[in-house]
Length: 328
Image (spheres, rainbow, N blue to C red):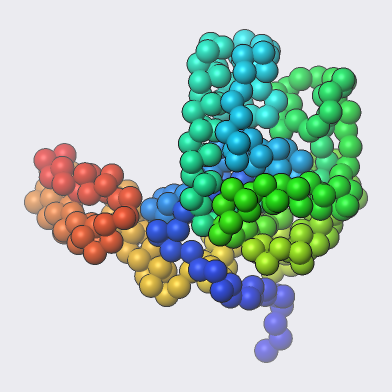
């Protein structure tokens, strides 16, 4: 029978991730798709200390800030649309109070600094090669915060510039954390507002630059999330209604490919047990006070406690506490 797809089977990595591995994720909203999967399954991960970020220059700036724990000063904040912002941070850190904004940003950066110091993996998801420079300044902004476009100059980074940025960044990173391993991905989310041709040029630029970086650094490798979406899942039924973002089914599929690339059989089995407990927690019975439901919760409480006993590093206390509340 003819094959009507072009399935992609990423080469299994020699650097396997388990539930004790500390994993820092930085990049586009696809980073958070993968990061949320890992977090839900009790992996030790920390995602986007600055919030979602798309371009290589801002990502490199953020890694440097994390390495040296460079605090945000009060004068670096600006007030717009009734909130305080910083161009290097996502709006999820913005507040109506200036002091609270500065505190939220610096606390996240300090936490990211400590996490990066001991991290075994850094997953970087690149979204676009286009940057926005605030007029009168040098360097890219990570988020425009709805500032008028007239305040920015748009540029497309070259392959050479992206390589230069990461080359310099990794010189600092590998002194700070010599054993860290880096996994690059290109986000499968298309930046369609830039135009079809510009989006393709941007993604191609990112991929060429990434392969040049990987060729130089043995610690770095590439996971083909973009290629899986574009070729393996070449069908609009795998997109959300905007026809730009992957559907949940597509994200699940790419996640399965990621797991088969970076996880051992033991880690996959442990993840499955945690997933089953999560499903049990999300189960909504007709009668929460029934004897059958209380028995169901008690059985899952025992399973969760046994998992914690065998794997004390697992972050499943929320599940244990939920199932222990037999009178709920």
